[in-house]
Length: 138
Ligand SMILES: [Zn+2]
Image (cartoon, rainbow, N blue to C red; front, side, top):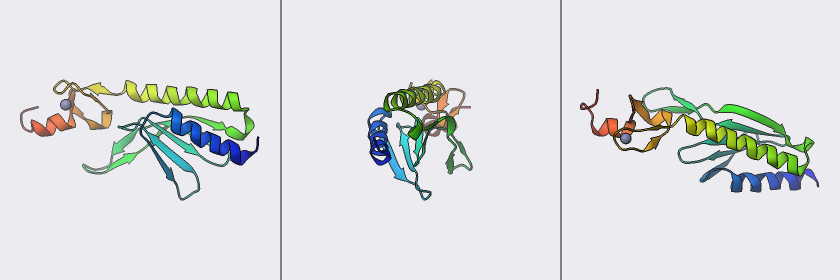
């Protein structure tokens, strides 16, 4: 199988195997980035030679600016692998990254929602509840 066809296969695989919804973006350097999950769980960057899988993560740079800082879990040189090995390895990396991300979620003790760490206020309370009960929770 030639490379362009495998590349298209990879895109199709990612779109159907990443946690929904999948946001696909072409980046200025020519790679294709997939950010999946709501809130984001897994980030995959696909280039002409490699596919890089990361756990979604980020930091608040200011009160209103959240900067994504995905944590890499693995890079596959996709042209060097046969189809079965490639897709198996990719599926395992995606699953692993997702498990790590979800393990960081906390359940808010007010609304009971499972919340991403960047949306937790503190002390087991999500940001939305903290805003709502502003002044009441300390
Ligand atoms: Zn809450």
